[in-house]
Image (cartoon, rainbow, N blue to C red):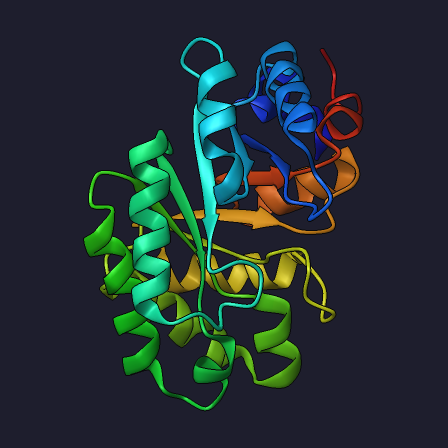
Length: 227
C-alpha cells in the first residue's frame, strides 16, 4: 500500500495538529515552523491559538481551528460564536465536534441543527464535522455512523472527520472510514484523525477513502514513505 504514495503526496493531505491542553504559544510557533518544513497542507490548533498561528504561518499554509472541542457538549450558539471568532482571526477551516449523545439516541434533527448553526456562522470556511466514529460504532452501530455523516452533509459540511483523538473509544479505523465513504460517496471529503502513528496506518486509511489526515506525529508518519 505504501508504495503507491510518496512522502510529498501524503504531506499534501495532512493537517499538522497540536491540541494538547498544556500547549503554549511557543509550541504553536514551533508547530507552524515544522509544518512549513514538512510541506503539509494545514495546521490545526485550538481556538485560543488561531491568532498566534495566523501571525507566524508561512506561504499558503492553511489554518484550521477546532470548535466545541473535544466533548461536543457545547450549546450550538457557543459553537457558532467560537467558529465565527476563529474565522475572523484567520482560520480558513473549522473542525467542529457533534453532540455524540444526540447521535446515539437518534436525534439527528439536533445534530443537523448544531452543524447548520456553525455552517451559518462561518460560511466562507471549510467545515469538517467530527463524528467520533469509534464511539458511534462502539456505543451505537454502523447505521448510526452512516446517519451522522448524512446529517453532516445535509447541514452543509465539506468534510466528515472520524475523531477528536480524545475519546476513550478510540480514533480512526479503516472500517469507520469505509463506512463514511459509503455515506457521502465523493460528495464530501473524509478526514481520518486520531491514533495514526505510522505510514502503514496512514496508507490503509487513504486506501479506505480518507482524503485528509489529522496527525500530531506527522514527521514519524511521513518518514515511513519514500521521498
